[in-house]
Structures are given as C-alpha cells and as structure tokens.
Length: 248
Image 1 (spheres, helix red, strand yellow):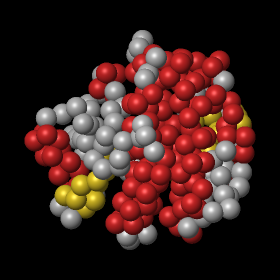
Image 2 (tube, rainbow, N blue to C red):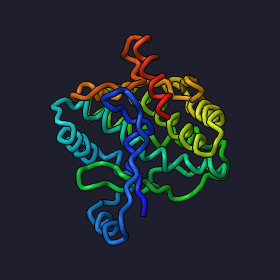
Image 3 (cartoon, rainbow, N blue to C red):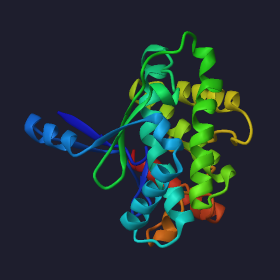
Image 4 (cartoon, rainbow, N blue to C red):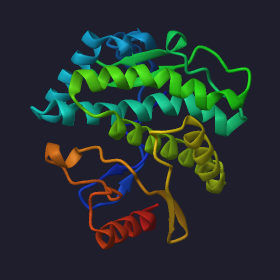
C-alpha cells in the first residue's frame, strides 16, 4: 500500500530545490498498525481551542521551537496541504467538488500530532458552490488557530492560497495539463475572496511553479527557507526557483 507524506507539494531542501511529497510503500500489516496509532477526529474538532492548542504544542515540540506563532504557522502549512489535497484532487481528476463542511470531514491525526489524511463526507451539488463552501469551512479553523497561537489571519489565508495553488498545479501536472491547474486555482482563490491574496505562478525552464505569497516560517525553526520564499531578494529567489524548475 502507498501512503503520501503530504507536508506540502514542494518541500524545501537545503540546496534550495523542491522535492515531491515522499512516497512510502508499506505492507498491509504495517498499514493496519499505523492506522491503529492514529486518532480520527471530526473536522469540527479543528475549531475546538483545546484541540488546537494541543496541535500547536505538538508542533512546537516537533520543530524544537518555543514560539507559538512559528509553531502555528508551520502547523497550518502542513495541515492545509493534507486537507486541501483530500478536498481538491477530485476537482482536477473528475470535475467534482468534495463537500468541505467540517461536520462531514474526518481527519486522521498521527501519534506526533500531525494531520496525515483527511476524508470528505460527500460531494457538493455543483462545483460553483466550492469557493464559498471552502471559505466557510476554513474560516472558523483559522480563527481558532489565530486565537490559540497568535498568528494573524492574513498570513494564514496566504498559506491557504499557496496550498490551493500547489494542490491543483500538482494534480493537473500529473494529468499533463499544468495550465489547467493555474486556471482552476486562480478561479478558486478569487472566488473565496479577500483576504486571500491571488494565487501566483511563474514559468521557468519551461516548467510552471507556484510563486509563493506566504511564508511558512521554517527558517525561524532553524531550517533553510523555501526556494520560493517571498522574504528573499528577488534575484536570489529567481535563481533558486530556476534551480528548482530544472530539478522537476
């Protein structure tokens, strides 16, 4: 059985390159054991301040940081990738929209506090309903995270923009039409409205990449910044993203 370690579509390496999510192949017995070690929560648990405080505390320990703002940002960077991959992949593959309503969503939480998978409970009647439904589902989650960690809401919504962009670009790239990923992500983010910044993309070396509008603060936890981190000098960012495009 194959599992994806979805910590983000394009993970920063020390060289500045991007790496795809790690694919881990395990046998059925190991898979069952892994599942038994996971907690399954309703999506509504993500709006519980006590549950969210534990997520942030686990993330502090995992990243060896004492800063709740850094831990909260890194938690959403990881969790948004996992949840949005589960919610949006069908949109690219079969033009259907999963219902993101929290009461219908189930999230799998690993023993170390990471959200490792998510399962929507059904489909929306129309794809056109997705922007509003997704914003309505994520708003209370981000409000709770902001309250618990001290992270302001605009940076969290910016991470959401990048997670949408990465998820749909990755899905359409695998289908051979990355331009459709750009189109679909831009439509979805625009439909979700302010304060989400517009999704941004750039073509380098013939490859389309997400030009991030958010910072995950990984450099505040002692690691190299993402190749597309917006807090770099423009020339440095372009050089690192070009190297990343060459590696794809």
